[in-house]
Image (tube, rainbow over all chains, first blue to last red):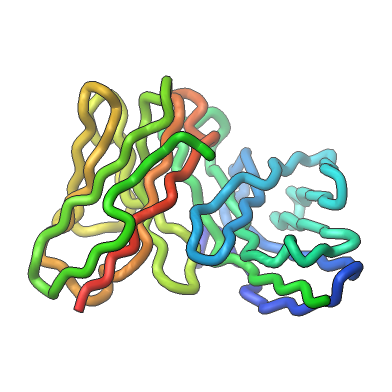
Length: 113
Length: 113
């Protein structure tokens, strides 16, 4: 079983739509969670961290459900510039000196005018 | 920009050849991690270097090897190239102890024919 499972999509939505992505992780001891964004043929860039209490950054809201071992990302009022691949990332251990990031395969989002 | 640089940008090699990829870490960062990203997949951890030594390895064969230099820059070497080695190779720099905060370079796109 993969460490991180993610629906690859693609998601095609009109501007202004609300879209949600989910991913699940297999290691219940995992402590750190992130969403990265990757534009076509570019490097991944940190979008936001994910906390149990949930966190919001403008139009983006991230949630963590430890009991079900899933992470979500909600994008409201989608913009054309949101078109990208969104990668779910898990770090197995808090304060791990190794800091190995486990990536999902990514969910592709296209926002159309 | 993250301040992490990689060279070359693109590379074409034939099966059986050897390749060396290079990475310069962000100023002040002492840890470098390497990832392989195949088309349509998330990045997969290859290994991490700290204090010029390998500090953890993913599920990659020994023909994938690396080095870290006193200035924290790093090399990834791949011997006996196979067609499946075609991918985007990403390096990420971080501070040991905060290794989950990784900053990615633009990557090297390797094509093996």
